Length: 371
Image (cartoon, rainbow, N blue to C red; front, side, top):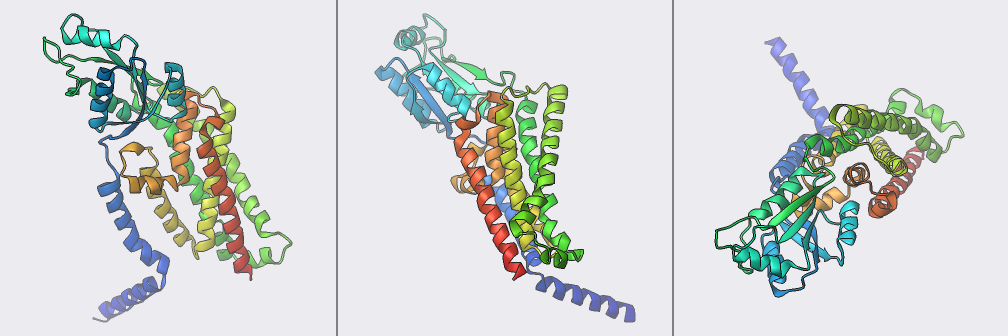
């Protein structure tokens, strides 16, 4: 009986301690809520509204009907038109679009031959970015979509009117898509985890008073904290890409300068995010809890596991606020499509701005603690 009473007293003490620990108490509620929302609402493997471009050299009424039918399928969303295949392929390489519909100048003649059963050759062509196999498969499925407005039906029954050409990953191998994204996931986990406890660890070890009494400025402390981990981040990136090339035949990037710049920007952004957590958390346990809170959406909404374009618009807004989303997009562009860093300027601007703003906020919060 006395043992039960003592056990209950300890349990009551733990409940009261948890109720006073606002961060831990919030994580108890928020982590399952976020998981439920992500997996039940935001995560979707059914690809819809793939950003696409069109090269229409036919300019015929039938061609316009074909484009309208494909748009009505809701699998693709034609966001731009191009005057030449070269322009469209450049947009595909930059990541502006993920698929291109090419209607040749003799489209109308091909269409009539196909409709009458004279010829079974394709009347048009899809060019897809196969670095994401799910997106490529969604476009390939359009070969079987009936085109009601255009009347694209032969006398021999339905046949495939489109040819699909797959760029960057013609075999649609999953490792080609996963390995570059894995760089973002591992760097997110390690960089944020390492630095999220940086300031907290100094406080718990009793070094904070020493740091306060030194001439070290807050910004100098922040920069000094993250510098060693920048080197670690580059080492991890080299290991992942090298082993990916060796074990899974993932191509190594040709534009090493673009890869180094984008990786540096992401590493510093992740480290800055860890420092922000470190200035908020009171204990290393709280720092780890906040890190997990950031990791879940960073992994699930970044496009690493599930196509970004398949997510609802509100989920895409959240994803755009996360550094991992911009790095997954840019490293796949650099590694798989040989994109140059200035072609990825929206991601460059976001990562650089996130780092600058985050460093200023972390420095200000640390200065406020000194006061």
